[in-house]
Every structure is written in structure tokens, then in C-alpha cells.
Amino acid sequence: MKSISFFLRLCPLPGLLLALTGRAQPAPEPAAPASVPALVDHLLAHNPEIAFYEAEIDAAQAGQRAAGARANPELSLSVGRKRVTDPAGVLAGEGTAWSVSLSQTFEWPGRLSLRKAIANRDLDLAELGLARFKAALANRARTLAYGLHAAHERAAAAAAVAARYQALRELFLAREPGGITPLLEARVIEAQELTLQQRATDARLAAQAAVVEFNQLRGLPVDAPLTLAPAKLALGSAPDRAVALAAARENTFEFRAARIELEQQGLVVSLARGEGRPGFTVSPYLSQESAGDKVQTLGLGLSLPLPVGGRTGAGIAAAEARRRQAGTAVLVAQRTMERAVITSTHRLAAKLAEAAAWSPDAARRFRDAAELADRHYRLGAVPISTYVELQNSYLGAIDSLYATQQEVLEAAGTLQLLTGLEFGAVEIQP
Image 1 (spheres, one colour):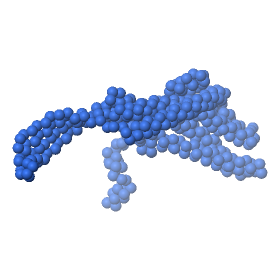
Image 2 (cartoon, rainbow, N blue to C red):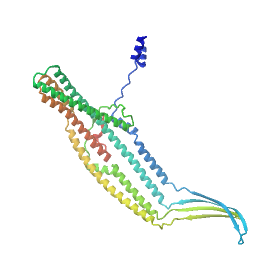
Image 3 (cartoon, helix red, strand yellow):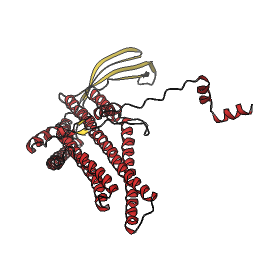
Image 4 (cartoon, rainbow, N blue to C red):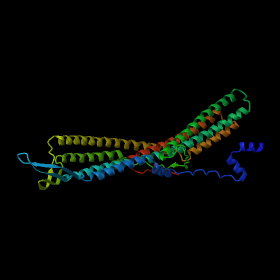
């Protein structure tokens, strides 16, 4: 009995069942690596913030329906008692008096269409906001995905070099250093190992931060696993500046929004001028009095507000001021757009030229050189200075390579948001 109770304390219930049945549960299969395009599509389909812009579109569509509808008719009903007396004050008759009327307000021609046009511009702005957010989201997803890939590569390179330093340090500790030179070399190797361990840790933390942000953008728990398939940039060429500017005038979201707002303010001015001809109300009515004689009245009423308070002129002046502001906003947006396009085009061209200077096998050649230096240093054919320089050069080359490609991706993404053009440089291939 003691042996059984001891076994139960050591082996929890699931383990006991497995031990008794002799069958082990299959291990969970790791998640298949996802390509960058698949991650971008998943992010656009499940990002929780998209619901905000979709709700804005729904609100604009509701406003569009409300702007195209006429005012609701009004039903009025009154009832009372009527008493009729003669000049001497003698009651001549008494009875019920009631009246009912139906009122409908009609707009002058053109005002209803102006309100609908203004509501249509609100819908255009809402749809443009959703398209802007999706484009920025896809660009951010591509940048994050490639940043995650680069962080993994940096961490792997730093870990590999740190492992070499660790093996050398253990080799030095295994044998007693004879002389000042071996002792100093051991200290150099130990210092380099500590530095590279910090470097590898920083790269792993950057990868974890990218995973957390990616999961938040996808609406998943922050600790959800994410396995990225190997990715690389398909570097293309920068577009011609004239072509980029022409495309930006049609596709830059901020510039398009400023133009839509200017059109909307022009419609608001026209509507404000139409307030000088206000709507009129038609009211058919029926009334009946039964105090003595029974009297019925059927008629038609017409009411029209008189614009004598000066509110119409003030409304027109305010609308004109808003339109001038919108015109200035369009000019500012155009200047900002042109400056951003020219700057982004130059930056993309410069970064593409910088990336083209790297040979396709640059990372492999630097890695082979670092491994070769490690082997020959152990044989005594390479001094410690050359060994350390080659290891640091390998890591520096890896950092510079991925930093350059990241800058190419960011510049191409910015230019794509401005122009709507597709560049080969932004295509990430698994």
C-alpha cells in the first residue's frame, strides 16, 4: 500500500492512465508556417478596428437615407365645448366643437437634392477612410512581418557567434593559460560573448514585440503562436517622379478627402443660399361645431416663414467662410502630397541603389568567413584581432543588410500609400 500511494503522489492522474493503458497521447502539431500574403489577408479580415470604419459607413448611409426623405406629415386634433349666448346673456345653445388638420411641409425644388448630395459626400469620406485604414494596415503588416523575419535572422546570427565565443571560452578554461597573451585573449573572448548574448536577447525581444503587435492587429491573444515562412524582398525600381505625382493626385487619401470636403462645402453654400426660399406648409383641415346649429368647415391652410431676421445672410457668410477654409486645406494637402511623393521617390531610389550594392549571397559569404576564421583561430593561424573583427563584421553585415531592406520596404510602402501604385519592392515572396 505504501508503494502504491508513493506512486500516486509521483504520477498525476493523466500520467497514471497513460501508464496503465500503455498508450501515449499524440503531441499537438505545431502550426504550419504562414506566408506574408496570407497573414496580411487574415489581418484585413479579422482586425477589430475595421468595425469602427464600417460603422461609420453605416452611419453615413443612414444619413443618406434621411437626407433623401421628406419631412413627416403632422396631424393636429383639437376638441372642446362651445357655448352660444344671445345679447341678453341667455344661453342659446351648447355643444361640442372639434377640428382636425393634416400638415405637410414641402421644400423648394433643388434643396432636397442638395441635402442628398451633401450626404453622399459624407458617405464618400467614410468609404475613403475605410480604404485608407486598410491600405495602411496592409502596409504595416508587411513591415511587421519582414521585421519579424529580420529579427529572427539577427538573433540566429548573434546566437551562432555567441556559441563560438562560448566554446572558445570553455576551451580556455579547460587548459591553464600560459602567459599574458592567452589570458588577455580569454578575457577578450569572454567580453565578446557577453556582448553578443545581449545582442541576441535584444533581437529576440524585438521579434516578440513584433509578434505581440501582429496578434493585436489580428484580434488574437498577444501570446498566440506565430510561425512565419521564410520571406525575401523582390526588389524592383523606383517610379518616375512625374508618374508618381500624377498617380498621387488621383489616389492620395488625404488629398482626395480634402477635395471631397471642398465639394461638400460648395454644396453647403448653395443650400445656405436656398434658405432664402424656405419651405412652405400645406394644411388641409376639417372642423365642426354643434352648439345649436351644426356647422362644418373644410378648408386648406398655407404657412410660409418670412426670412426677416437676418439668419439667412449669416448662414451664407458662414458657409462661404467654411468653403474658403476648405479651398486652403486642398492647397495645403496638395503641397504636402507633392512634397511627400518627391521625398519618398528619392528615398526609395536611394535605398534601392544601396540594396543593389549587396550581392545576393553576401550574408552567406560573411557567415562562411566567420566560420573559417573560427577554425583557423583554433589552429593558431589567425590572430585574435582578425578573429574578433571577422565575427563582428559578419554581425554588422547582417544588421546592415536587413536594415537596408527594411528601409526599402518602408519607403516603398509609403510611396504606395501616396500613389496607389504597386511596386515590385513591396512584394514579399515566401
